[in-house]
Image (tube, one colour):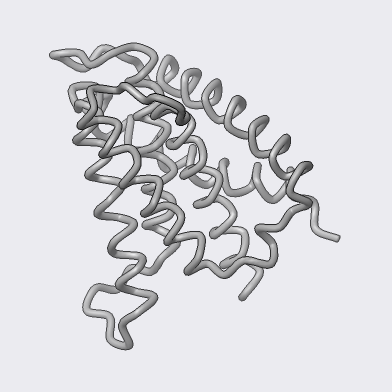
Length: 180
């Protein structure tokens, strides 16, 4: 039986490595992005994945994996923005940003482990296309919460939705890695 925790960590290490490299190239320019901008970036990635899953012809030579990595990294950035707030100028070193990245991934992984226990790893029987649809649903929820100025009556907040998107994208990447 596959070890979900190890597979999860492998995917996270791939994503974190790209995050660190982009921090070296661009610094923390992403710190100026407001949450709706990050949400829209994630939405674009999820829509592209859905298009790739539905279309027979690809005009850009990048597959689903790079888009799922983008969903994970933008979602972590959004969680950091929720914690620290938006700034006018980049303000984090690569080391500080990596520390925050790891902190939010740890919380998100713990959530996954708790849900995975309760749901009996049901995600393993899901299709990647279903995980994509769930990410899109979470994005629409986040957009509605943003339109409601962050207020919910009975539902989880924005942070829980970003965490779920991270976990769904990681599950999709595990599936895609097993298919090869």
